[in-house]
Amino acid sequence: MIVVMRVGATEKEIAGVVQRIEDTGLKAHLSQGAERTIIGVVGQIFPELQDMLEILPGVEDVIRVSKPYKLASREFHPIDTIINVGGVSIGGKEVVVMAGPCAIESEEQVIETARAVKSAGATILRGGAYKPSTSPYSFRGLGRVGLELLAKAREATGLPIVTEVMAPEDVELVAEYADILQIGARNMQNFNLLVEVGKTTKPVMLKRGLSATIQEWLLAAEYILAQGNNQLMLCERGIRTFETYTRNTFDVSSIPIIEKVSHLPIIADPSHGTGKWYLVTPMALAAVAAGADGIMVEVHPNPDSALKDGAQSLTFDNFRRLMAQLQPIAEAVGRRLAAPQEKCLR
Image 1 (cartoon, helix red, strand yellow):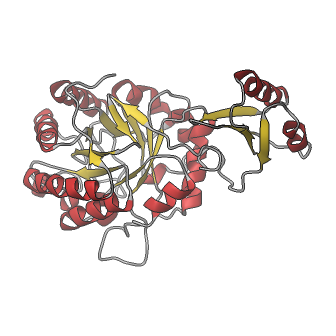
Image 2: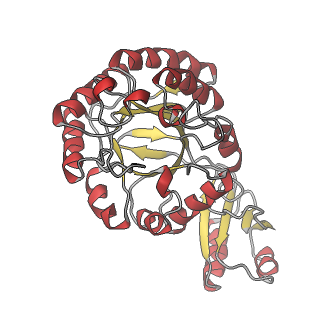
Image 3: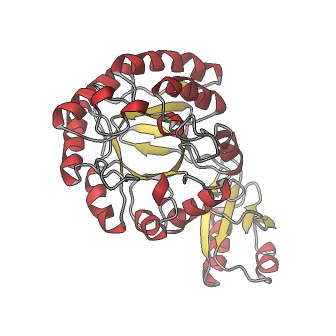
């Protein structure tokens, strides 16, 4: 349920509505625009609540939210969410580029890659310290050592870092190092993990599950938002279909759909979305043209020798070519590429 306040409603009237909502044991979520204030009501709604709120001073209308996801809904929060990460804004006019190796392998590898992607224009460093793998015999990451190496790369380049957290008991440790906590596709419905990252103050990137519908994805986002963490972005990384030529089917249509139904920023991951390095650039360009707030791509000094996902990783030269092509696409849709910061503002 949302309460639409009249244009010019006073702070006292707004506070009165919030107080009445909280007096009934529900939560009030304030969304203030340039002219109008909307108050979202979160919790178990009882039938008499609408009549109770409609008669309060300053209230113009009370509307029931039709979507099963409330906090993630644009009905509930019509203003776009913009997240600041180390001086980089995600969700505004600028398109952010997150780039780096799939898995952290060594200090030399991650720092060399961080410097290369920043030189080409990337704004955030991606890299996996903990790696989920379909096979137990695949490389699983360096764990805490990988986090420490990511921190060294941030110190060397000034790039904020995004890295995956896989278990509720690891959230506190990963949050010490990461600027963005990533929830991978396989953990999209790990509800205990979603609750734990929702309790932090760190920005979170929630990847779409391998076979998840858009509604299931947004309901997973609701778990994080319901804990009070509204620094949440979504990531389209391809879904499993009958097609086997590509690793996944990259659902470009999900990007404008999310922008229509939700206020959350949307990032595209064409590396996992396709699984083939030569498809990463065309899909990245398509994602930005479709309205993505950022892209996440895998880059490695020598993809042929990568311990993880070398087939979908770009070389430094290929990444530079991608960045050169992204700028005119961003401009064509009224946006621009974000510029790297000299220092990560933590």
